[in-house]
View 1 (cartoon, rainbow, N blue to C red):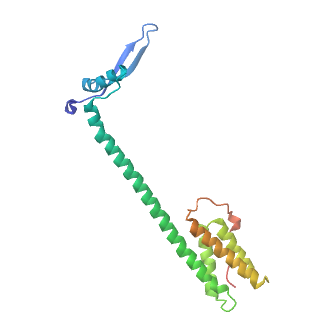
View 2 (view 1 turned 90 degrees about the horizontal axis):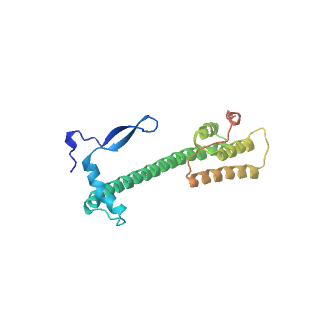
View 3 (view 1 turned 90 degrees about the vertical axis):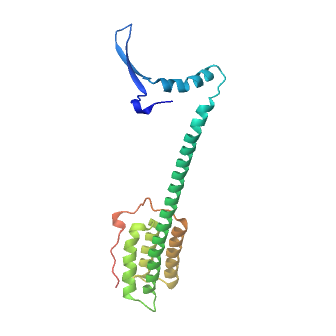
Length: 195
């Protein structure tokens, strides 16, 4: 039995003088008899080819290995749980932002042309730079190009642009991938006002 109360020091530094060149070297060595005695029989059994551990050593290692397995499995479970929570929270945040963006699209319909909704859409589009993939932003700017009052596009082209924007938003929500990189440049940002 190892007595931990009497200042147990597991290693002892040994200085040796080399007989050939006279240099002094040092090495670490187990300094405690209990440590050496604990594993001596196991080392002898392995060296003799029997390869069996003492039952006492096995009984000592089983709870340690069990504790390590429980700790590691708990850590993995915690990590996976936190990761799924983060993905769900990010999904809900994106869903709320996209819902506001889509609701404000009504401001561009011919029968409404609501300037407040158009301004809300432009504000939501500016916020898209924080959480949307590049493709959503490009499709939104393409839609704005189609509905711009100075440009004349057919209703079919405008509907197609809206459909592409909605489809891109849907694909982003289905993928549930966090935004990690972008190819957008500062000059891609456009400050627009409702007219």
